[in-house]
Structure formats: structure tokens, C-alpha cells
Image (cartoon, rainbow, N blue to C red):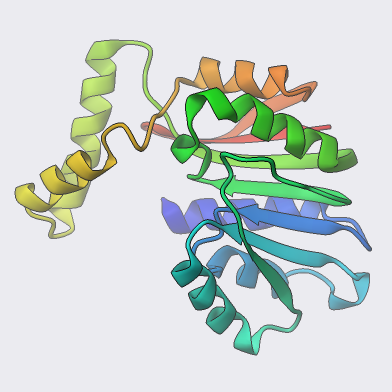
Length: 205
């Protein structure tokens, strides 16, 4: 449901992006979400798009992605585990990104996002999660692996991917993520998407 989640994120951004404010994509990867957003917002509103990633190679791909964009985007190399400056933002998006931030750094990151958002601004957070019920968590993981097999991945490829992400991608439960968002200061939080062990949160300042 990756493409569907990107489309949902763009819809939320279009709903909450305000004129003469900034929209951030934290962990922007190749810039595809930002390009979709650039094509959906009114270019006369003066909305500034900013993509942040810790990979210079990804940022270079993002810049190439934007060569034919109707509006420009600034791409910045930064590590989300360290202090991040968010300014004049009406929307901040994190798609499958928070799960790679060290757990002890997550609340500070979300507090920085909250402080950088304007009143009425929103956080769009899509994450892989774990179930609080071990039996169901194992089933969700197996569903995901079967999904990959059905699309041509070998068991060896799936195993190597899982080993590569072990202790790097650290998912939390829905409840843990919701508590984290509340702790950062957001008073309004809801789910707009759930598919097995993937969820989308919308949080409003």
C-alpha cells in the first residue's frame, strides 16, 4: 500500500498546507512524495517545499526528480538523530522514517517538529509498527514476507533484508507511538490508515 499511503499523505498536505509557509518531508528519499505535492498545490500560494535526508546520494536523486517540477524544492542533508530546525511549517511529513531514529531521540525530534509548526499545523506520520500481542506480531511479519514472496522475492533476499534491518529499524506499537506524539505536545491525534503492521497518524497542533 506504499503508493496509496503516498497519495493519502499528499491529500493531508494539500488540506493543511497554508500560503507562505513551509512543508517538510523528513526522510525524503528520492523526492517522489514532494514532487506529487508540488504538482497538487497552488504554485501561487508561496508554499516552500523542503526535503531532508541523511543520504547525499538520495538527495542527488531528489534534485534530479525535481528538474521538471512546477515549483522548486530545497533539499538538505541532515541526521534526524540530532537537533533539527523546523521553521514556519504548516505540515511535516515522516513516511517510514521515525522507525529508523534511535528510540531515545524520538521524543526530542517530535518536540522540535511541534515547536516548528504553526498553530493549526499538522504532522503526517506513517510507520511500520509491531503488535503488542506476540502471536499476532509474528503473523503480521509472516504476512509481510508472503507479500514479498508473491512479488518475486526469494527467501534468501527476504532473510538478508531482515538481517540488515535488525536493530536499525525499531518499530513501536500504535499505543507507544501515540503516547510519543502526545508527549511531544500534540493535543489531537488520530489514525487515517492501517494495513496489517503499517499505520498512518495525523496529529494537529
